[in-house]
Length: 295
Image 1 (spheres, rainbow, N blue to C red):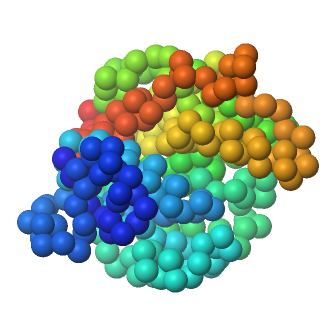
Image 2 (cartoon, rainbow, N blue to C red):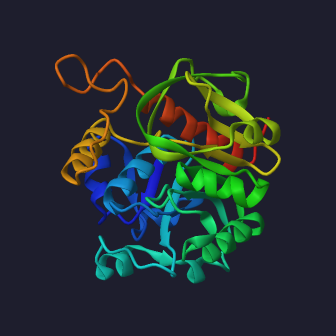
């Protein structure tokens, strides 16, 4: 099935080279498609990198999917030029009157701040409330998963102390759940964060689908509201944790090496494949949540 978006984005050439079926959203061919519409609130610093990761994941859906990227209006990213944002991104106010089949909210490098102290928090709460009436299903990633769980369910987050960085294996408490179709344990999910949700509150209020070797609830959902939460970066490509580690060293942060990530020779391990399970989750999310076929 095809993924429809503005193929002038860097992801256009990358996904075509990978053999994914890509259609430019402005082309005549796009007029003959009837895709599910997904909007992505991209809060990450490296916008093109995140665009490629989420577009790749959505390209594994069992139906055509068109993707719109948008951004908050209460903060202008410093690492992306305004011309780029103006060309490829819509804003919150521009999508508020529209209906979408799915919404994805990415992580953000703000997790050490309390939610209410963030300048973007009122706008994010507005987006979360808007989604209830204008979006069929939601997918919240890493920091966004904690922000949304706090907004919707009052689930608090707490500091982890040292940064959690690395690749962790997970068990599946509910392998029969539709979102876990064809996914087998152990599930590997990259982590890069300083906070975590309050575990007892998660287990009390939501269905935990993946639990880490350390007992953390990492993937959980609300079937009734069609909300999916992933505390971590399942979408990451293998090199990203290494780049972040090198970056943190250059900043003088004295970080610990990512856990379960380098082999004895200092190379990135190749025996942990999380991309396959991520792509299956994206397929299942579109089929069972975005398309409304829960159960």
